[in-house]
Length: 181
Image (cartoon, rainbow, N blue to C red; front, side, top):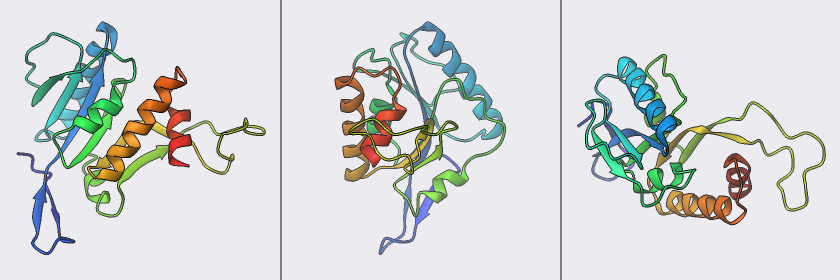
């Protein structure tokens, strides 16, 4: 159990929700990066539970609380990892992240939101293509996402993954933006 459990006072009887971080990677290069990223996170948040969703055959690694085998080796496994997370509140981090400070406040911020993500650096330029949301709807950085488990977030994650797969997109942020708009 993590020291970062959140008491949800909105419920009649206060209950403790589980919180944790997930990484999701496929391929040797990204699997190595995930292990490094998890270690930098543990330096800043030593008691946080970290799960890894991967195609690797590794059975254990002391930095991870649990290692889960992905259902398939899709190049964007973050949606599956977020959907299958065992935590009530999950922080997903891309494997190229290096954590420099405690970020547990994101779990508490989920009291007021189902999903948190930072704005992407690069905005839309020019007129958006037909079918795309207007430029005033910012793209979000999908490398750092906090999600509170609910039917709505599960539906969003399924639709986001479907959109990326059907359009065979190389990046998942445009699909995320379209689904959230």
